[in-house]
Picture 1: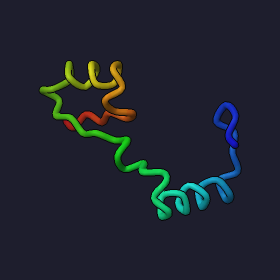
Picture 2: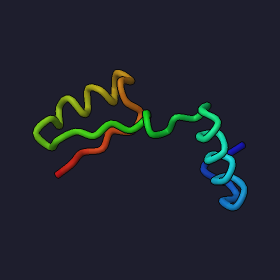
Picture 3: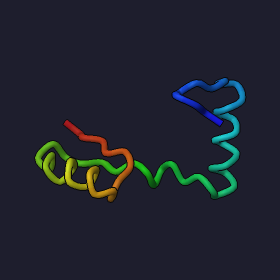
Length: 58
């Protein structure tokens, strides 16, 4: 469990990796890349929940 960003990295990150490998934490699907020209779509998708972590490419 992580509360307010507090975690033990030596325990937390291996656990996340094992969850990813088990197919129950697809963090790579949480990230969506956008061109800078699509900045308005980036904000809209983030607000509506289309993406969890938008990344703007310059």
